[in-house]
Length: 501
Image 1 (cartoon, rainbow, N blue to C red):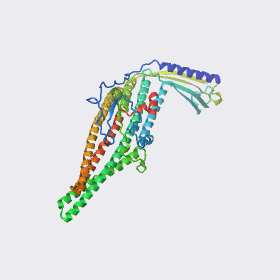
Image 2: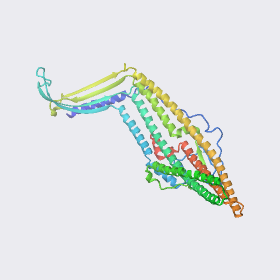
Image 3: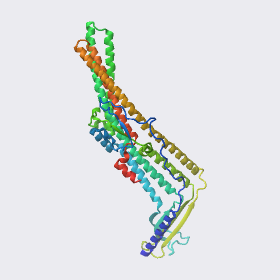
Image 4: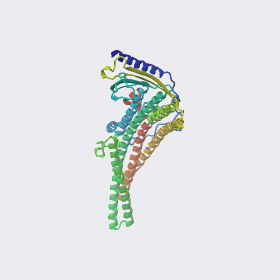
């Protein structure tokens, strides 16, 4: 019995080895993918990059200098030197469901790729069947013992193999690997987007808090002005028109506060959502613009490197790679398909005789299938694959153009933000000077209380504009880090996956 089993096992192993060798000599039909070359442009903006203007009298007014080729850190948000912000970003990256879903999608794509590897090897299945049978009395009995009632026991091993003669399996593996890489870059994109969204939401919260404080000051000033005009009107010193105009102005200013409070509440809800929590579990951190430091040295990647750093561009490139492999798959499906099979086992009337001498059987077979007529389905599938490749090529080109536009927009915005902050700081300084002079005139009896309140209102409005200008600088600085790719390739998890490609 052992000799029979050993003989059958040797036959199966020999068949598997021969089948594997047959699969090594084929060619992979279809185009061999070549990554698109980087754009030949030399810069992002029409003119050369220059350091932004500075405003030393306000926070966030430092001049920013662009450094080409400077390393872009993976944890770029730490450059704002705010521990509360850094802690919130780290917690969000750990708990956010979108990032975790992207990681799971990568695991799905990787397992699909690994599962396809099995197509390169022969498949083997073992089976056993047992039956009780009765033969026809009008025909010769099936068993050679001339029994009409008999049992049949059949253990057997079946091995089949499809040689990859035209590269169908190789192109399928190539496509799945590209899809795995696309999922990896989608994970990186979600990582960068989340970190940028958290930083932007925190800056917006800080800006809204300052705007709310200034707006409340303006409302208080206008309320005092209304009270003064009401007193003057009752004494006949002011007209009803003057009082009505001031009451209208108070109502207009008061109407601007609820939208700001609504936006602040929504920013708090957004921060909770980004951190993977419910609105009632909003982060304890409270952000103020004074708690942020503006990065003064900003990296600017070489244009030829941008396409390697942007995960959305890399994802589009892998989609293009997968589409290229699909063309080879469509072509291979139109070519002959070779299948090799081997079957070895035994058949006996008694369980104890299953491996006895003379009970064994085996079969070696090969077949070739050539598609002849499929109603044009295979031809149109090949044409569809080629059209999908052209579509992916244009989507890749669109992603590259959008990447360069993002960088150019943020560079231009940073330059204009610096000038806007400088102008807002000058307006605040002028308003403060006017306020100081009016206070001096009040002491000398030259100016009225209404004139002082008007000067205070102008000053608070200047503060409101200054806060918005400061927030724009911080927000667009964060946008530049995101536009350049966010430094994901320096992160340990992504670097490990990069080496596993």
